[in-house]
Image (cartoon, rainbow, N blue to C red; front, side, top):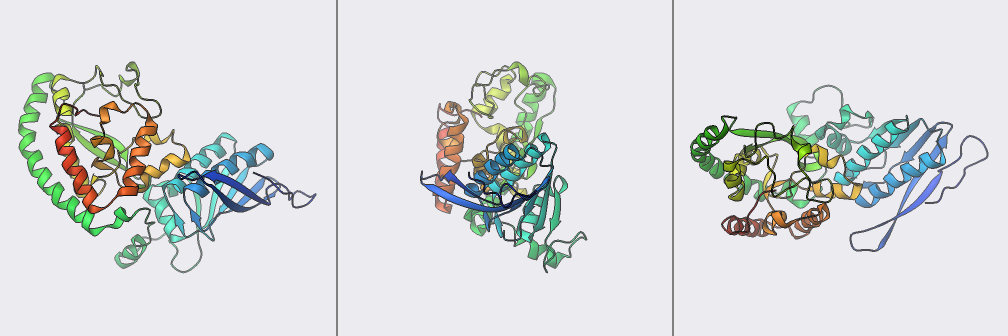
Length: 362
């Protein structure tokens, strides 16, 4: 990154800068941002699209801005020209917010248009960042919108991937979730008795996970671990490189829990999450908030689609995955290959995996 001084006065520093980042295909892509420094405040004018290439460069630029200007106490992001943001853009904002906090600086977002504002609201980041919406007609107001206004605003949410708004995929999710919940009700009687007889603890386990764009939701499972499993997590070694946590011989798993995981019966309550729209039948693996706290900007791409009960990671041997990078590559592969027929194929392959000796939980 190169910085070009504007003058010999206090207005100096990153007047304009060029950055380069590698795309998934390996070629160089140039991203340009207009930026200025005035005393202790830096202003960055974001690009029209704020996706992975721009987000990676932006994050790197923020770090270099503080390296060159340690006196910075406020970073202003001007979204006047921005019309689209994806999960990587959201990730870059989260990471840059943490960077500003570590430097004792304030991050302020100005002229935020409706699509970006809705993405921030969806992930509840509008409560974390100092946000000033665009003053143009159609901008988000502080007052509660009417039902018609809400429908209009929802249509302006970023379409990060074709699967996100596919009516056919959603219809398949609803039908599959209804059938799955019927089976879950039947299973609940048997599973509940088995869990209660083993340790007398609760039948269900609830955990916070992250959905599309990083939106948080509560995922439901039949409990397969001991009651105090979360408190004992530090006692168990992580067998996967990266933020993902997994141990095939986790001592916290109960006897009935091992059977539930081997047959994937523990995941049946997630059909409720699918019916609500937090998940899909097929998608990427739903991460925990702790996981995404350690994500690099490019890794946020996996949140461009809804998480699924099954997906590439399931049919390719989830128990044999040893690095987080493998999970990322499988998730991105799903996004590239997605179609409704491909979802059906993955569902069929999942059933075959579950009834094979290679099934296992993650």
